Image 1: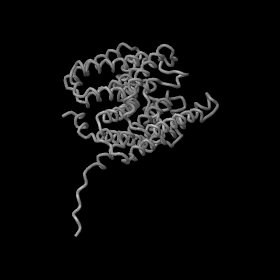
Image 2 (image 1 turned 45 degrees about the horizontal axis):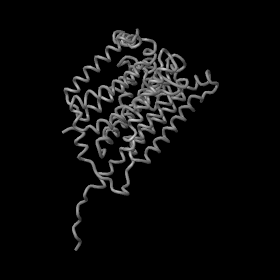
Image 3 (image 1 turned 135 degrees about the horizontal axis):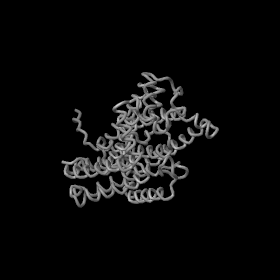
Image 4 (image 1 turned 180 degrees about the vertical axis):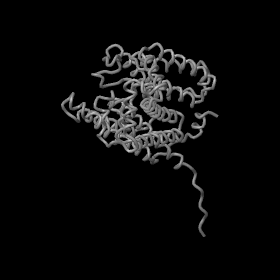
Amino acid sequence: MTTINVIRKRTHRIRPGLKFQFDYWMALAVAGLLVLGMLVVYSATFDQGLLVYKDPSYLFRRQMIAMFLGLGGIALILQFDYHVFRRYSVIIMGGALLILVGVLLVGEESFGATRGLYENSYQPSELAKLATILYIAHWISSKGERIRNITYGLIPFAIITGVVSFLIVQQPDLSTAGLIALIAFTLFFVAGATWNQMLIGGSVATAAFFFMMQALPHAAARVQAWQQVLRDPDQAIWQVRQALIALGRGGIFGVGLGESVQKFGILPAAHTDGVFAIIGEELGLVGGLLIIGLLGLLTWRGILAARNARDSYGFLLAMGVTCWLAYQSLMNIAVITAVIPFTGIPLPFLSYGGTSMLFSLLGVGILLNVSRDRAIEKHLRPQPRRKAEG
């Protein structure tokens, strides 16, 4: 029996006036990440804000605005049932594709890549992550058992995922394209795809990924640099070496919040892709483990929300968002610790970047919405009859 079938058997009709429970553990994990994230963002950006914008809190305030917009988005999402996303998933996906095409046509180039709009303050690839999850959750849940068929399942799925990934690779942004493909394949697998489909799809995707790593000069250079790290860490590229130095300098308890040396231009992109290195330097191993623990708690509560969702759509939606935040966190931390080749991917809730912050919080809003349904089964479960008194 597939996971989807198990979820379908749990489907209940909502009783009018039923009060839903709120996942306080999930909210606590996100709140902790936001507090630590804002502290580290200020620590890592005040110098750049002072030098570039003559205001040490300039970048911090921008991040704060994005955070409040995201929290407002959570409050809005919690006002309605998550099935409303099902009605608009096609429109959202179509809009995301159009914006991705627009980036390639009129986007602004930065560091050899064209990934943003409006002075790179908006990153459409963040919208593409959420849009892909919304659309694929809708598409798979509507297909049911037919996804096991090559014609109705694997081929359309490969086309959907391939189009999104192709547009992002053109920016070029191979890491985000790989992340979206990984999320999509996870949803396809848990929905009940056959092992033959996963073998065929996985083989094709892996071959395409390795081909692009060799075909794209910057990707090939990063792979070669990573291989060099494995042979001799002293010969690592500058960014990887400085990230490792920051982690080593922090020791067990860190040098103190705000006391990082690497953030002063030594570690490139210290406030964005390299923020975990700054956390390790200022808060030490203890701070790094705290961040990993909070991300792990969020992932656990997300999986629990998916497992107890009242229907297959809610299950896939929660699983997709959970995989997105978990996979992206793992990729960022793995890069900073030189486990995988260097990629420019932010750490959710902690890296500076308004678009990433906003859409990550919107994803949390969806998780909280789905998680409220965990109360349904408890409230609708038949209660044992009490023995008559007397």
